[in-house]
Image: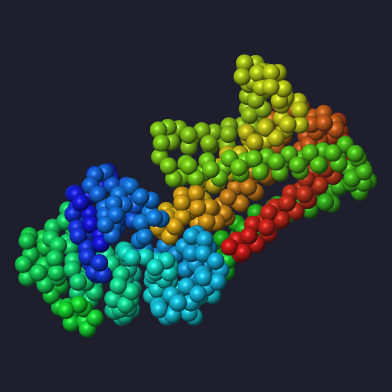
Amino acid sequence: MIRTEEMSFRIGTFQLHRLSINIAKGEYFILLGPPGSGKTIFLECLCGLKKINSGQIHIDGRNVTNLEPRVRGIGYVPQDYALFPHLSVERNIAFGLRVRGYKNKEIQAKITETAELLDIQRLLRRRIHGLSGGEKQRVALARALVLQPKILLLDEPVCALDEVTRQEVCAQLLGIQRRLGLTTIHVSHNLEEAFSVADRAAILKDGTLLQVGPLDELLDKPNSKFVARFMRREKNLPYRDNANRKK
Amino acid sequence: MKMAVNTPVRGWRDRVFSAAAFFFVSVFIIFVLALIVTDVFYVDKKAVVTVLASKFIRHALWMSIWTSCATTSIALLFAVPMGYSLSRFRFPGHFLADAIVDLPIVFPPLVAGLTLLVFFCKTSPGRWIQEDLGIEFVFQPKGIVLCQFVAAASFAIRSAKTAFDDVDRRYENVALTLGCTQWGSFYRVCLPLAKNGIIAGGILTWARAFGLFGPLMIFVGSFRGRTEVLSTTIFLEQSVGNLEVALAIALLLIFVALIAVTCIRLIGGSALVRL
């Protein structure tokens, strides 16, 4: 579904080094790494917000390397959500639909459907200012999902939330991903999140992919000292046996 | 719109701090009001009647209003794309371009008039515009707008750039992934978010253009019923000893400025609420 071939991107002294990843259809993939390792830049390259220097990006068998972000069919939820503060919740969700020229009736139906999916009907008339972190997260997710993308990119989607809300949101993310069959890339520096949602993971450090594989493999057979330290730093994983995880 | 919330005052230190802050607010407001009230009390009613009845002064008022509004519109037309470009794109000479934008703010207003006069009367490109193209500015009403533009447009451009700088680029990035083109993300997201700053720049530009005096005297002069604006009328009346008439015109200037700024703020405010 998503395939990057030797993807490289340079900005200043930082570089993403020839990243090659294959992510299957319907997979929940988590990209782990310390802050500054290039996780957000990787997502922005996939979205088309940054133009890669070399390599290729394939989505659903199509080479999208030189395509504009709007035609890549990707739903993107950035860090801190970037909800448009001058629009209401409803207009934030409707934004992409209006841009794409949907009729008002269709827009209303899609908003209702998405709001029900994320349980945010009561927020639709509210303004962005004043929403809690968890509410903002759901609205940002609704804004991305309403366009029915095949791929969902989540940049640190729960890092700004408290522990309880984080667990709830992780469970909700996984539930929605499973129900809609979305291919999802979730970026995080938190191992707990990875164990609560991911089918597979990759470890990124200084723009270089160190290891890709199922979490158990990363945990049991790390291929470098850094991966071993990253995976074993937090051994008490509270919701590792999450019922929603794929067997 | 966000509602202003009073900062809670706790203890004597907070009270001293608040009192100090309010002291400066009070001194400034009282001083400005005192100046206006002095004018109001000193003005001669007969002079007011003379001013309102004078065909030439009504013409000067009209000239002041339309030229300053035209200047503000043209300045905003330049300010929005220029502010956006300077804020979002890095290009060779960016630093220089950014500095040149501020130049008309820092050089004395008279220099603007003198430079324009030299450009249009002494240089080949200036003479070509005036003589061959037939677009005359020197001592012409069009010259008022040009002069005001040179002296005031920088305020609009600087404000627009600052406003665009304050808009997080991630909003535009998200808009791009949601289906916008670059123009769409600018128009639908960046522009509405920068609107407050752009309106503030518009007010500053209008105020500067409306009250401009020095460069106009040099570049377009002050011909009755032709290139006279309120600010130059005040100077002319005062220079021939008609202090009462000059004061009445000054009050008219203050009154119009007050109405205009209030209208701009109200229109700008309601536009923001609609968004």
